[in-house]
Image (tube, rainbow, N blue to C red; front, side, top):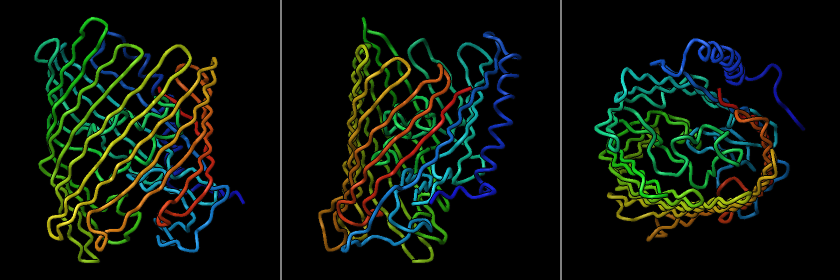
Length: 386
């Protein structure tokens, strides 16, 4: 039975209200600013709804009966922001709106700020707030708040228009920390037909009562990543894009009501290979995060991958994808293996250069019976940039 909730839930009402205010305002900004203006305002919106069409919990199911208060079978589409779908239709898990301001007082200096409001958290949150200075035509230093560039789509994963799925694969894109406060040194250059970009970054982040932790814990929590350092490199020659990244940090997770205080040495690396020629394109990415828990002296590794192929037919783009996430440890007495996998089929229709509609069917398999159960999920989204 479809239940969208009348009136709309408060957070979704806030999201829609903000979008109605910002979209016409963006046209005013477009009229008031020119190509020579110091200030540029842009924005994006994704109105996404979905529900589980059918699902079940295996007789040997060992996971939680509820995730963030949602009865299972359920599907977590956005781990970082507690976006969970159930058998009732909802706009809450993945709908979002963002606005970004870029100010360039001169050719070498820039300031960027971005606010995002989500269906799971109606309060606008500061995602980006940094200043950049170009040392020369190839090198730039940036200082402030940015996204951790762990994944290929990290910098623009909230902008639904930029990829073929309804949302980026949660098997990879979903951890308790997504931003950092610090500095990065960026490099860009062309070598013949090849474009190379690279960066080194360092910083830290602390998140109190994170939405990620809210999935399983109702009390006070705190997560911190300190001494974060890493680097990434990307090469593009038109049809082929290859990217590699490495990162490490000292991670700490505290669940105060349960007197849990875990510290771990975190290491992560990832690779992405994307191929695009004529109407066909292939997207692939794999990552592995490992946490070496210092107190109990065991290590958990979490490899994840996604592989998909699409075909552009004018304004239409059908896309099929497979993704998998696994957790394994070197001490099963302290941490049991966990895994789930998903096959999806998406149809995207581009309404123009600035908006698109997508419909996606996901078949999720809870391999180790502790990730919300097996289910089939349907989602539809409207994505727009302005």
